[in-house]
Length: 304
Image 1 (cartoon, rainbow, N blue to C red):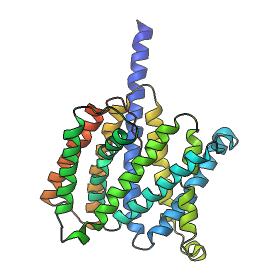
Image 2: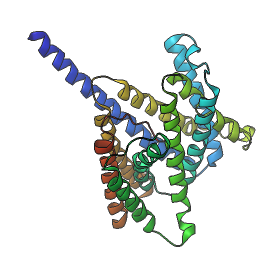
Image 3: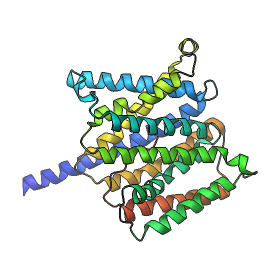
Image 4: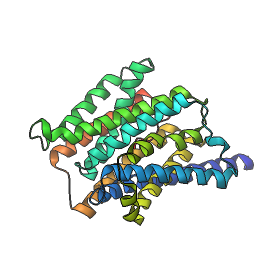
């Protein structure tokens, strides 16, 4: 009885720790979005993506060396899987920064919550997953919410340019995670994380002036990559723990909207329009239905 009580207390303590780590992960992710928005005032998106990719690979390699003493786990096993995942990452990162250059931090964070809707739709088409009856109203609510947010400042098709990039980013990101699911355990997670940005590194490196970028390298540029890296580590650790469900962890993603709202106000003095609030409400309901009704036991990956 005593041991049972201690075990229960230990489990509750672990769940509390994982909750804190998850909240920290989404806080770091929102912070990364804010820093990248600030960086876009001094750097172009190609320079930011190249720097992030290079630093991300360096940090991953250093982590493996410190933890394992070797780079054996990041050895490429299936080039087809890694290349496909890296191509989708290239599309996702480019579209994300293109969208962020024209959207507010809050709008960017809110629209990123459409990721479960896009993922569920693609899973039906590509993975042939059997749809739940909840999927159709969830997708409908997500579409309405996205349309409301786009419609706030609609001035013809040209005004939807950045929103189109955001939807493209969600599409590429979802395809990347579907590739990861298809690969299963055939490719180690460390290898996936390390090789994921290789196409970003090669493509952006062929476009930008590397010498010029080196001369204007700043701590903020380095910090952006560190924030993204630390966020990934927090969220991966949260999803891998056996003491809590993926569903309860996924629900905490909604805190990201609160952080982006706060950062948007602090740095740019921006607040959402009433119609945007309504759009966010529809998106939150749609995402909630996907997480809790359509895929109650699914493990969701980060969309960055």
